[in-house]
Length: 317
Image (cartoon, rainbow, N blue to C red; front, side):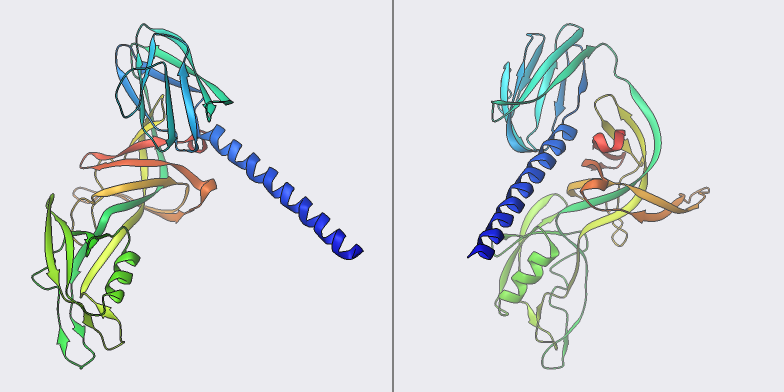
């Protein structure tokens, strides 16, 4: 009995130590996610997203800084959660404070809001690792399958096209290629309907998966759901919003601009540099370090002019 009592006592200690460690890390993460200072152009609106894991209340102590969430109704107090976007509108030039409380009760920090007449950006040139998630499962091309009967077939030929984005399979949303593989496998070879985004328009296509020689059902399509690479940050403004690359991220096989749903920046170590020449861009090669401690920011847009988003406190160190 005594041994069991000691065991439970140590188990309790481990539990409380773990709880304290998790609470401490969560508090540190949120403190790092929220900037100490932001700036807004006079008489303009600026959009923000802090990426907090908990619900929080933001309140303005001055009528010169108005807040708004998805309702777009100006207020002196709003509630946000997760990656909710909200905006601040700056009135007269000056420095003001906005308070942030978790659950509307626990004070996390005060943010200094500078209403200014000029927007500043800092040129960077810093190398960064880039991860971009496609908006849907991107079709690279179609291919032939050796069926269970030994015959070669190409079920997706003429139905799916290079550059298509598969959004749903029989009405079920597809976010990753693993989702698609699982759905096709579970179809049992029955006719299916794929919701596809093609050149900006949604179309439904019918397709019958084929059982391959390995016993797995397949569509006969090459697909991809993300892309990675190394590039350079062009500039960062006073609110941590960045522009990078100077060109969009295109798929290496289709050559089309990747339609992205989200993306992230990570720290990287450059191992080699290939100098660019006329008609041929330069090339950086290296190692990208993925993980929470290496996360440097979030990508919000992938455009022909470059990628844009927000860097975090880790990048600013």
